[in-house]
Length: 350
Image (cartoon, rainbow, N blue to C red; front, top):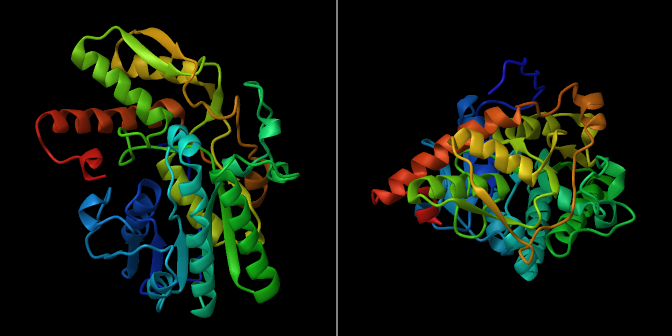
């Protein structure tokens, strides 16, 4: 997606070592499966609790298992024979889901609890956990002109209710398994990942996909309005999926980052209004904006301070938002057309 040189990854991993990726029926982990497959790794075990026909992507040659990893016996089965484990499994979605289903989000703690213990008992060499910027202190995110969040800003703790607290506690599990038991764990705090092959309808979609769908629907129906959650002034940074999977690989194979939470996100801040304007430009349409002030909006502002990742990895997510959003819009538009034609789409499989 960009012309910047891809940094080298120093993996202590053979091409036929077994890699386990949990949550692989979803957006990010599904992309991670494809990423490692395309690099030539021949033994990948992909796991998700959704039935296989409901997975976002299925990659040829990969061992796909439908298992609920919140059950201990399934976690043990999942990591058998593995060398590395990437735990991206969680019950989550966009802000609408996170604010309305806090219990479901909190229950994801069972997944990491069982997966990290099973991985330790199986002698896993490296264990990656996908955390979130929702782990950061919400008191620091009350202004759209928020200062970028550095890793130490998670404490004193006041995480996003439900989802954020689950992530923060799971981070602590990873830190203690290294401190007490010597297992190499790695923790990335994701900041708003977007791109093709993600949820774009149905209630779990995030802002970039939602805005693309709304603009596409308006063009199709002839509507002249777009509904925006909140007042449009709330700000975020958005990371393209290709940057995310590369970042996971870099972080997991950097021993300087063992048991050390690190931001993985773009540092380019944009308002929701600005995001809408970008999608309107891509779609070639201008809509009247209606603001739903009662809708879930999350914190007022959130951005990633990338000082640490630049220092350690000499890299940061760098796909420009307009480039990534163009690819995302084009993919969702084709999904929309296919659904109207009665074809099977990602959203129909969820």
